[in-house]
Image (cartoon, rainbow, N blue to C red):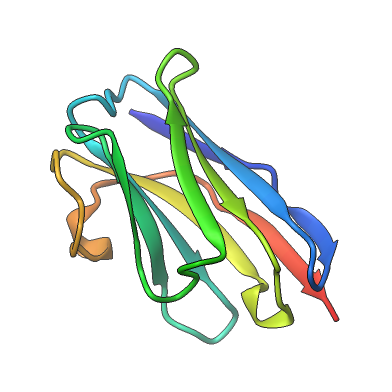
Length: 124
């Protein structure tokens, strides 16, 4: 099982960025994929997840209202669209997979498969 996050980069505060999570040998029609981030010196933080069984996104408080998670099953890819970015959003962003069909309320420990992160840097 492979998950690969991509699309990170540098952006000005107030800007937008969309990250992609490409999956291999992982069915997110039956499982779920989550998005997390980790800033230097801070713990890993959940952003939200896409519950494959319900085909529905769920959002944590960390970026709620500024992000949209959606999936493209034909491309086997989950997206994290981020808007109105702030300097404090600077972090390495990860996508991860869990065999749970419903993902709401589950933390990082529920996720078995992790991809390499992608760096997002927001300058003020």
